[in-house]
Image 1: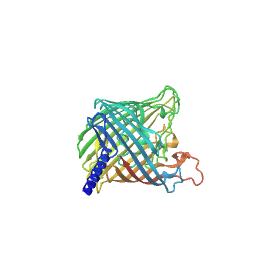
Image 2 (image 1 turned 180 degrees about the vertical axis):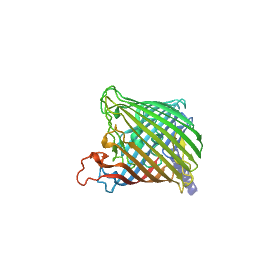
Image 3 (image 1 turned 45 degrees about the horizontal axis):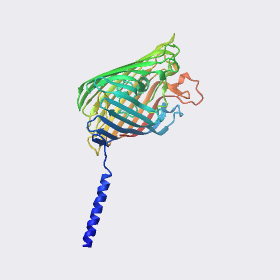
Image 4 (image 1 turned 45 degrees about the vertical axis):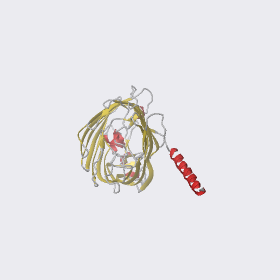
Length: 427
């Protein structure tokens, strides 16, 4: 009898302990039920969908090996290498009463801008799909490749024309609307960062439109056009700070561009992209026209890229509302395998460009991407660059060798080789 009572007491105590532990894991809300998802990031959404909250990010670890013209600013043209975090970002975004949204994305580490900088920082009104309004720091609507996230672009680095022609993120206000068959965007942005002179506010006006008359899971035709007008202040002494064109791997070894003091710049972009089953392709043409101040000489520059890719494992490249989207492997074990070739060129030989920087270049990229899952990606790229005029380092940038009084033994090259590998986790 005593043994039976003892067993009964132990059983009740054990049941109570299990019950208390189970109750400790319950989530109690003061309103409607909440749906929590943990597949890639953490997302919580109310059952009605009125409110949502998501935490995500990306980590990109990269290793580069390079020589010749790719290793002149920080080296002598011999073989160099680098291991670094290309990007490490975290973001928080959500919806409020369905009609409002917000996003805050920060760099923890970035090879281009260091850490601690804000990438996206905006509030969006999205009552109507055809007329959303975004206020804050966000990407200007320009260029298919620029608007496609760095997580989803085919090559490890975007095309060289992207560095020279596409502004990226700016503080401003924009109106935009899109579905999978058409879309548009127009915004007004702060343009002060492009000019060295302080004073009156400078503005940029940027817009883009696209159509996708063919758009299914396995077939796509995308046509797009973009333009931006970037004005200086009324002071004609405003000077364009200049920019650079990367050689496809090292963002530090840029081809510097020197242009006389200017009044304004206008830039345009044409986009063409498509896919058919596992094959996909894309291309863009960009042109920048710079209007000089006073008696300065106007300058023009242009460039392009074309690329073609093939998913060996049969996937079709995802596309969503005017940009490329996340690759989802068909086989979770094998993953998705993609090979591609990319050709890009820049023409910077207008007489209005400083003589030390006039040049023409071509960049060829061969690459392979492996997507073990929707979160992970491993990429390897070989890059070859070729320039019409030999390059040398002036200590800070790459310039034409014939513009310098070369020191004995100073290296000059008209081409360069590079190999890059990146491991990415995006959640």
